[in-house]
Amino acid sequence: ALGLGGAPSAFSTDEAVNSLEDITHYNNFYEFGTGKSDPAQYSGSLKTSPWSVTIDGMVDRPGNYGVEDLAPESALEERIYRLRCVEAWSMVIPWLGVPLAGALDKAGVQPGAKFVAFRTLHDPEQMPGQRSRILDWPYREGLRLDEAMHPLTILATGLYGRVLPNQNGAPIRLVVPWKYGFKSIKSVVGITLTDTQPQCSWQMMQPGEYGFYANVNPQVDHPRWSQATERRIGKGLFGGRQDTLMFNGYGDQVAGLYAGMDLAKHY
Amino acid sequence: MVQHLNRWLRHVPVWAVWLLGLVPLGLLVWDALQGHLGVDPVRDIEHRLGRTAIYFLLATLTVTPLLRLTRLNLMRFRQALGLICFAYVACHLVAWVVFDMAFLWAQMLKDVVKRPYLVFGMLAFAMLLALALTSNRFSIRRMGAGWRKLHRLVYPAAILAGVHWLWALKVWESWPLTILGTILLLLFLRLLRKWGWSGVFGVVRRAG
Image (tube, rainbow over all chains, first blue to last red; front, side):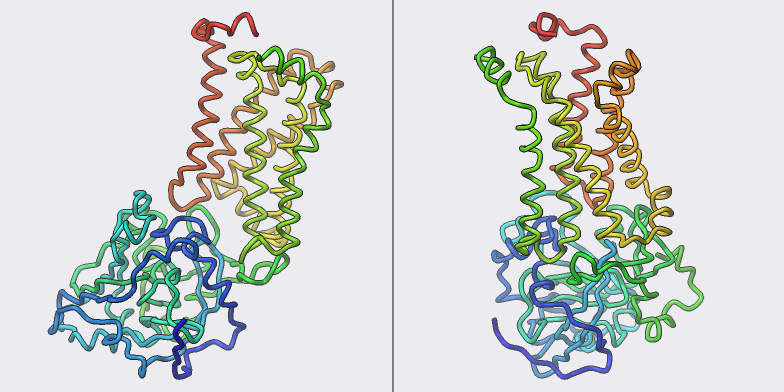
């Protein structure tokens, strides 16, 4: 794999990082199958070059942007983040990426924009999981503009000092560490700035279970399972469970975004 | 052909079925020791035990229809199949308590009464426990007609187990749907006979 490097960041956690094997062989990427090892096994068919991301909607410079335009190698930072899946497991991943805010600035966000909508590639030839209609493809996600502009929110193009493996959402993906993993959309081909709340795949499928915000919150359970605790992957058979932290432990940085909001209602 | 097979089956000892029942467990232990379970062995162990339990439950439910439809007689092995199923159910539950939930009793108790998939799973466990405890000659003799009635619980238990599997997933996956469909089909066959439509299957009456 191609080596990549990134400047260290004050946002990184000093918790023990998961192994590359853990990070690349335990993935939810239903475009390649619903099994945790399916993405590692079947994502070889994804062509990540050439790749472009269409940025449109309420921007001054709509158009197709290359991965290198949005996340130039010289600008990469290493962000070691906790990842908390909605399925109540977690990992620590050393991402390489750039703040999404900077990438959006390249397109020039217009004053009226309030939300950012993201879209994954839709191509059943390359993504065999899309042949079954388990979700309404393409995979879609969205953020409020202030969430998107938050310095913790990044577009990642690598991990563990190398180019992003296909199963982790190559060539470019979103990482929003205080939200459940499904918000961090993979293999992004479209970004649209809009003034209305965008549709998100999981919310479209099961609005009672998956909300627009999907902030990690140990007090608000998934209707079918508890979110109070989580299992850290890679700790072996007797690793046990640990308490899930509000906003996945990023409350100091992001709690202000939700001041005055009822988080049980806006889950 | 079937008669030939049945004659041969009479010589197969029941312990052979028990031995067969140990194979999936042996493979699981082997995979665990060899590190073949992948990144998250907890999930793999728990899910494989649960799936194996439901496969043996299906095998148990298939014995009677097989006899009626094909006259293949596996009756002698049904008790062992049922008990093997229960052994895997028990292991599945222990794996959940020990590896997955790490003895967090408070959270487990709260979840078991609140989460539908856990409610269904636990109800199925309770029913299968009752069946396992009465799967012996002494109970059969003592309970008389009540025994047959009690053991009809195997159908609701199987349906609950199938729903338990489906409900724990984020999307509708085809394999557990197929399993639940098969369980419902077997129940349907059973009800057909109860409703007296057994003539549909020519051989049914003679074989039964």
